[in-house]
Amino acid sequence: MATRDIKKLNQGKANLSQHNHYDFSVMKPFVKFGIGAMGAIAHTLVGIVKAIPKPHDDEHAKSKNNKIIKI
Image 1 (cartoon, rainbow, N blue to C red):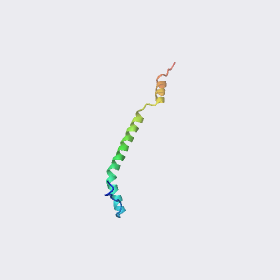
Image 2 (image 1 turned 90 degrees about the vertical axis):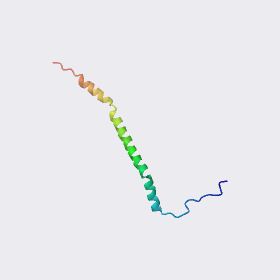
Image 3 (image 1 turned 60 degrees about the horizontal axis):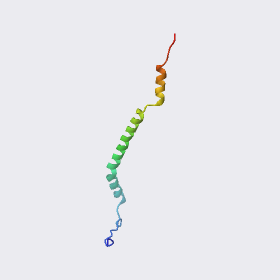
């Protein structure tokens, strides 16, 4: 049925330098958005990791406050 009109692609000789430039100009906004999104995710993850309290910080704070000086 559908075998009557088969289009043969890539039969013409295209200039590869123009083709590659066209691909870059089409993909540039998507690449720029992807890089910006990865930067935003990285900044968020750094903020989350910095906000997590470390277990050894609590022990040092408790030992400093519980000092008893006898005279």
